[in-house]
Image 1 (tube, rainbow, N blue to C red):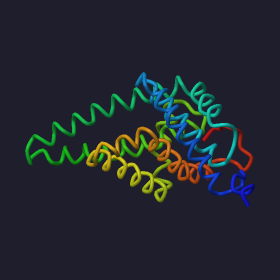
Image 2 (image 1 turned 30 degrees about the horizontal axis):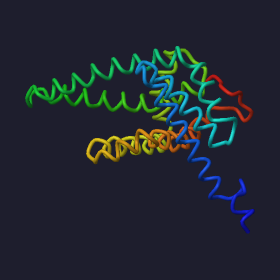
Image 3 (image 1 turned 180 degrees about the vertical axis):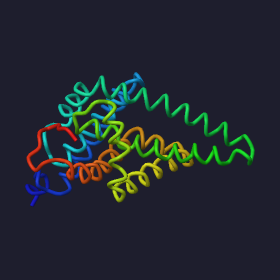
Image 4 (image 1 turned 180 degrees about the horizontal axis):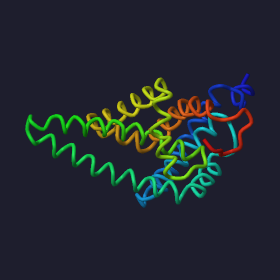
Length: 212
């Protein structure tokens, strides 16, 4: 009886071990994101590791640092591009929102661009983690692929919006949970949607990273 309780095949033990891996990946993401400029590379590595964790492939730490090293340069450039564009876009939305009703059309256009930006951002590091492409093609695919997979895209956006909403409006404990485990859990959940999308673009026997 007690022998089976601690067996690796026990669902409770498997769940506990996987939760521990997610927590550890969350810590690795936090530590590797501390320079701020490396958030793109750490997010790419986190998504890659979570997709591997779903398939029980390799070891979380090794997977994380493998992806981090391979994608450091390109993911960092992508992060800098999206950060700058996001700051400019945010400033534009705030500016036009305060210009009166006669400028509502411009404000509406900025909101539409902001939605497109958010969709692209939600995919770009996942695409970077799985496919070999130039920066230009990765950005292009991060806009094209979501609209060809609307079901998963809507699920991804709803999940991210819910996380942002609860962290902005709720008590400190929600922020604490998100930082200490939540980012890893979110990436693990979103990886289900990313894998469902990417499988449509990958041959049956795919290399570890391929062209899209």
